[in-house]
Image: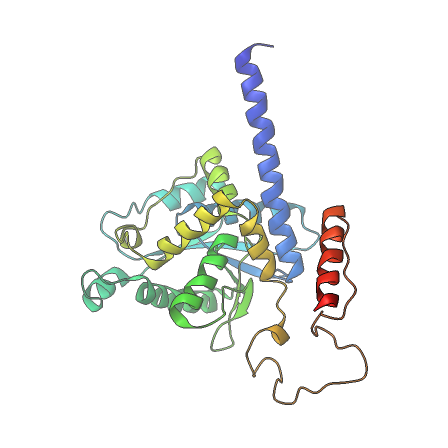
Length: 303
């Protein structure tokens, strides 16, 4: 076997593992949160970015192998941004044989008119886009609206809300719209952005950049993204741990009276679920930790 063949085999093997991981994580998220049910019509929101392309690709695979039957319609919102390549998505989707619709709404002019120069356009742009997509889903009789947000997006949103909004809130994998009529799902909730980027590059999706967002280099989300990437580089595994924390919330150890009844909290004669662990026997397996615990116990006894 020559060197080129060896490299090609290695690259193929690496991609197969990547594809399997993304498909597994997407399938697990769909199952864990019951995102897609038999008979659903899923409106896949396709922006032209790496995330939505990956989501569509994986959902098309799921459609073939899933034990349930559901239909897919891809929807792109043409916001009339200058230089937007209108032909890219229709050509791509036609080649795939996917049912699709392009919705044309000039939100770009509205955003430019309403938002002062230099200010972040994302909030208004997102609100306008969301309203149009909800109306489109109603018109198309779609039962689910699939968005391409991934695990890293969810963590970035968590910190954005903590730092700037004073809320412990992220992007949920599944939610109902404010009017109660639409169900939004995020099938890539368990997928890492790094995996999605590698997957997109390998499959050479025809990426369309967002001129509105891409022109604003000082967005807070980019600052948060840089912070998380720095943490991950210096402390491998931190992103995974934080993502896991989103599914392991303990209201009794926070400070929200609406989520836990601190006011009426009383002592009791039996063990209290999620109570203080000060009286629980430690469970150590490492000899060093066992030795350290014994030393700490002696210190406490001598106080």
